[in-house]
Length: 303
Image (tube, rainbow, N blue to C red; front, side):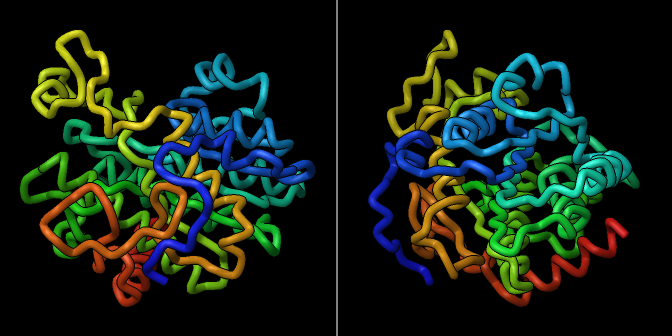
């Protein structure tokens, strides 16, 4: 499916509006990055709808100070596979089932950083960490679980660099981010092919701590903010609006029986293989052959 389905929501919808009248009592949701930016708004919206939300967090004390009133916080560093496996072990030992998983954590446009066996940080944290996280927790998935991978229109900057995944031949922070976001989409495509309802989403443009590695002068030059750092671009969403599509992906009955789709503005996105960026999905990001290839490579890398 490559066309909108008429969700009844749109660009300006908020997470609370999407969940109005939805009862998630008795449902358990896991939201990585669920204590910052759109992740925090996602956590609060799900909790207000009755879900029990577990937030794996690298900065545990910050997370507890932010969302402990509405969510359970547990330690997790997605860039550290030992941490991923430790979290999974603790969770599986509780015997609980996961109804919703939203992979909202991520880093963007960071300086060249190596983790683990020399992996480029954005690919490692945004994709490989989440890949290992989902695989480790699959025994806890409910039969009707939904997995949401938070991607971005940034996927339009780069396909998977099969011959240089970790930028060993020259680092470009924008291309590295784009590759990791393409990987998020391909992950959802292949997970769905394996029988798990999975979706990738573009939340929109939102000013959040995700931009912490960007210089203000660059954001001023792009027309995002003024000299004082105040948002001035009317095409940017609020964090509440930015959380809407991932919440819709996780709960909408209109998506029942579907999966492997890229969503934006609370609907299915159209293909966009033009020079224009910012909307739609590139064919390479939903390519079935590439999705299977990346899955196999990711499994190899994460053992």
